[in-house]
Length: 332
Image (cartoon, rainbow, N blue to C red):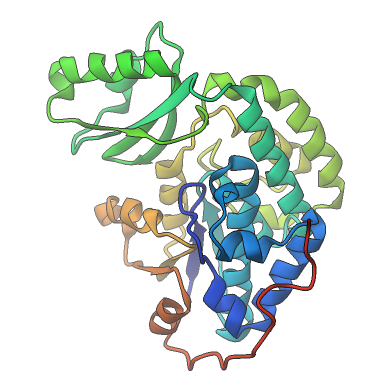
């Protein structure tokens, strides 16, 4: 059976994510311990207890990546789940690269923490924003026409009926008004997103050169060949298995459009039997459903906790293996 595994990104975080995996599986606990050592902080405490930092980009990104890899490695080792290909939405692309054994976990959590810190510092809070536009017959090209002359970009092409725009706050509001005032915008729903920065917009571009240097240095320890089975948000296709290409696409992902529709099409072109979303939330399953016939014969599942894993994989429960409430490594 051919199975595609996909991982959601920022916005899917929640208090308690992966805690049931942590409590039941030594594999999951090892993941949290490794991440905690790498970051010199208690990642389990950050994920499992009420903590305002969980919604601060610098901490959100390594927390989500750690939780998703803890879930994935448990599913892989104790449930026998194997992925023929991987994809991830924005931050989730890094999780996919760790799952495909391209980037070591300890290095990945460092990279995404630095990515989050630089993204947050690129634009002062309140200067930028993002808005989701939802419409059954949404035309990306017509929406782009409404962005002309404005400091606004297409941030995410999530589904045939959903696009997210990002940029300077006043300009984003103006763009949504322009679109809804046109005949093609009739019936469109707009939801302003609660975000701390205008992610995936030109306003993020100034941090890319420095981040490219960080990635290039880190990439000397990567196993780049397996990246051929991971989709790139930037290109919309699979990575080409080269170090230079991988660094370039991950760099440009910061200010570029997340071409998730193209990623879904690329993954479905493999003709998988199943597509399974693994993470604390399940936004991607709905996006895949929007492909309609483009799904082929693939069935969709989402694993957000241990109970849903048992249902989806029809595997006997993992026996609880009592552990201390947190990994051995703590930070002040």
